[in-house]
Image (cartoon, rainbow over all chains, first blue to last red; front, side, top):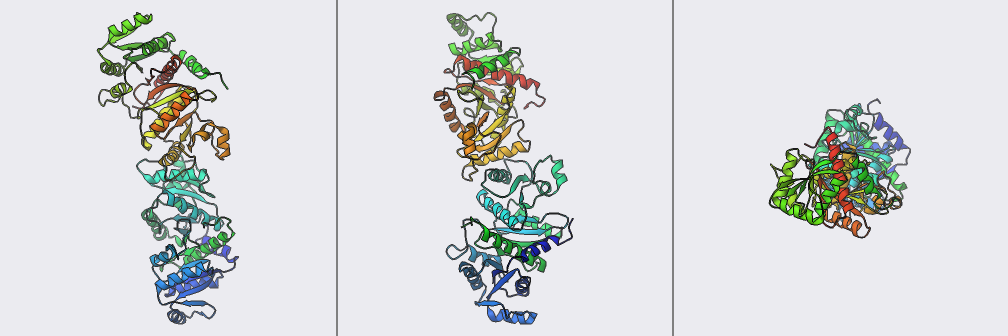
Length: 311
Length: 311
């Protein structure tokens, strides 16, 4: 077993080999979001452009002893304007990642998914938690526990593909467990049927780059012995790297459980828009914030190298 | 490629090693059904009990030069009574197979599926065509093109398992192609999703004894080159032995197409009741009738050896 936080440390190290990624930071008007952005800049992860009320940001920086003399600020009056202006920076090619500051996630996402002025692609937008779970060897990606409430099969295809792409960007393989309450297909539990469909889609090349198995119950997915006892023969069971949850409620409970009881660190990132979006919350540790940035930076970097962008 | 009808011939030969199976023949009151029963008896496939109006059956036999002196007849006045009495013979353990005579399929099946006096088991009742298709190396089982109109996933599980059991009873492996219009999973085509679910159920041991793949289009299922061109890597594609159709309409058209244009011989059998039911139509050749009997006899024989009957 690795030391706690070794996975995040490796992620950040891996990322520092890449030049800083130009990043629009929407409304960094509280301590944690401003320090998150400047710390990520100090580590060489991002080259931030702060988007928000200039005077308020400068006053906050001064009170915290943060030097913003080298940092570009786009002055806008409030959070809604900051979301729109940050998105606009991406549309103009001036930013390759987006970072959430002190505004509500919905406010930022509304600007991101806006029909004409947003950052939509053909790919569904989805959220990934990148988790460093003590006692589990793999960095765990959990998706989607934050954006898609009750995704149908079509949405799940994109949710899975986004997570696989992220795993590859982070230098990992992609063993995907599609979770349900049971590891058998139950005609009365739709998520078990969808899990089977997703596996077949991977077999047929409709989902690429990952090894899928599902339905799997949580224990079969992450515990080799639980998988063995159930007689599940699979390259995924017991050693999953990506957990695809049936819906937001199940995912949210799973993620919170890992964070609060299993003492996991959780980084958050939204994929499927033109650029990755660093989505941290005020409760996140600095380490989690840096891991979120690192994941976004690696994803943006991998995307630059992709031949087939999700246009 | 084998000579035409070689497959049926083999099936009948294989069957003749077994003692004649006691069989209740419901209402054999036209030439083809009476001759079907007596010919099957002559070949040693079945030991028939004819159930129907005695005088009418004897008159018919006399006019066709058929000797019924050694054949038991249960005298009932009409076809509905014949269906009920034939079913009753099975319930009393006096018959291990049921054979349709000159009555409507629905009339016979109504007696079979009747709640209290019928032959229901925990397994869904389903129909299999056993086809000898010129130009195709395998004996093809097509299911369900005759009984279940629009089966849901739960029903399809039994439909598949019945067909697998039949293939095994006939001494065959069970490579099962779950057919749809396309070989990819399409969230808008439910049969593609159900096909994927059935495959996973076979992986998890919820369906046993068969190798499943699907969704497959008809060409991928039976033509190795078509499968190759589509890049489908599968033990089933191109060499399927069982074709599971999405619903009765698609199945019926497929079966008729094979019979009328590809000049296939088709034997019919209903499984999932307490005993197999030989279901021939007046248009069937004697060879097809004998093949239906042989399939039923082999299934009944295998069922006797089963430890876990579908109670």
